[in-house]
Image (tube, rainbow, N blue to C red; front, top):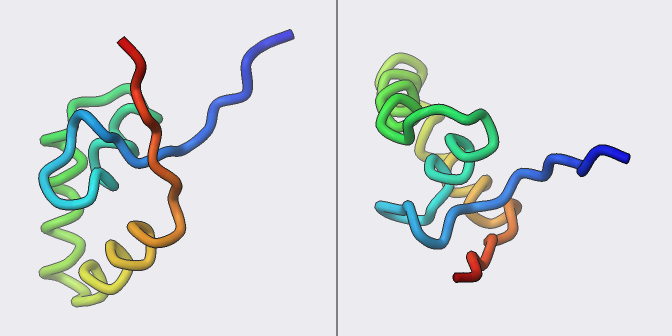
Length: 66
């Protein structure tokens, strides 16, 4: 049975809250790309900061094990 893919905030690749790092891990892309898209989204429509804060509250943290 395949493992279910879940969205978590990153605890190791974070700048502010780990939201973009977690989305990048989930999608399998570079976190810088996700951060750039998020900045463009924020500047164009102005809701990016609010959405980021909501995601920070809603998405649980993934605690990476060594």
